[in-house]
Amino acid sequence: MTSISRRAALAAATLAAAWPFVPDARAADAPKRGGTLVGTWGGGEPQAMFVPGGGGSSPQMTSAKMLERLVHIEGDLNFTPLLATAITPAADGRSFTIAVRPGVTWHDGKPLTAADVAYSIGQYWKPISAGLALKAMTGVSATDDRTVVVSFSQPVPTFTFMSVAASEVILPKHVYDGTDIRTNPANNSPVGTGP
Image 1 (cartoon, one colour):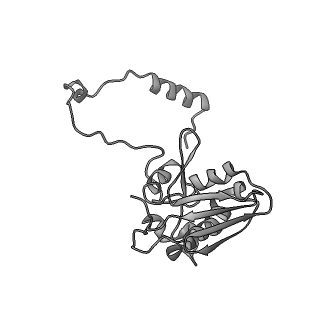
Image 2 (image 1 turned 135 degrees about the vertical axis):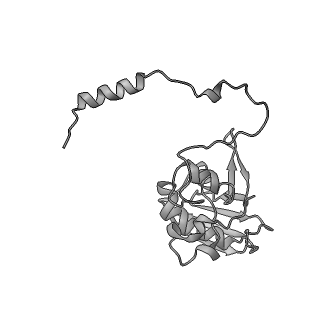
Image 3 (image 1 turned 60 degrees about the vertical axis):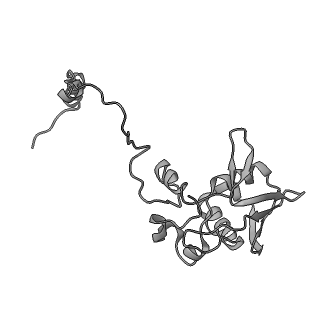
């Protein structure tokens, strides 16, 4: 059995790093103009198209093209509507009423409803994804097909709730209900509302 000391390993690594770089002969060719550059971003291939617990930048980039949010946050920190046409805070800051955009369909043709939004907030955002931002949440309900009310035990700043609404996706209840959201096979072939 051969052992190598740490000093010998460090010396070998230093020597390898200092070894002169010999460019590939192909690099000497004249550059080609035009064409398409294909590159990757982040840590490589995403482990799934949508990773409910986070998963880093790769699955966030892929899922963002399929699964949409209630609102979008602009560079000036203003919020613009996406799947919600309005999010209205109560005067006491203990609830928010969400108006769900009509006419939106999931990729499988089923309509987006308030039940999808309420399910996403109650079963995905609070227990899995949004963390402390929704700690004071006491309930969420769809009061009709286009309206959701989210209730809190204490006042929640509007910016805090709107920031969650701008960062968390809406999932189709008919695909995820009754399953473990984290391991649902739909995570690798999401049914969303996005382009």
